[in-house]
Length: 45
Image 1 (tube, rainbow, N blue to C red):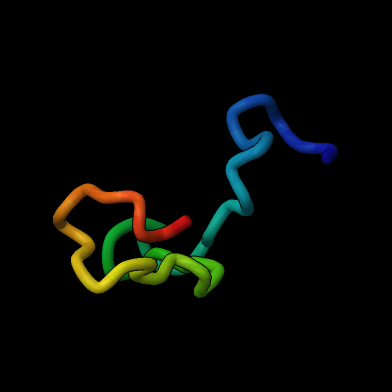
Image 2: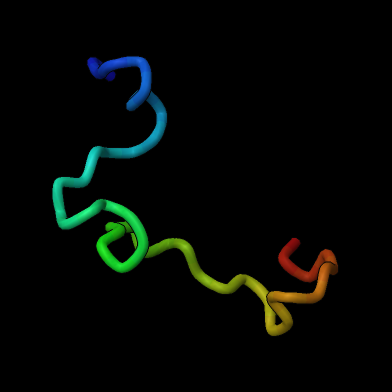
């Protein structure tokens, strides 16, 4: 990727609002993988 060092490997720079918090843009694959996301286990395997 041709980008400045601070942007490499971090997805893309967002110009929407602040780019963070409620203005963050994600890929959509950040989902809950288990029925108990706050309890550690190996059920995602």
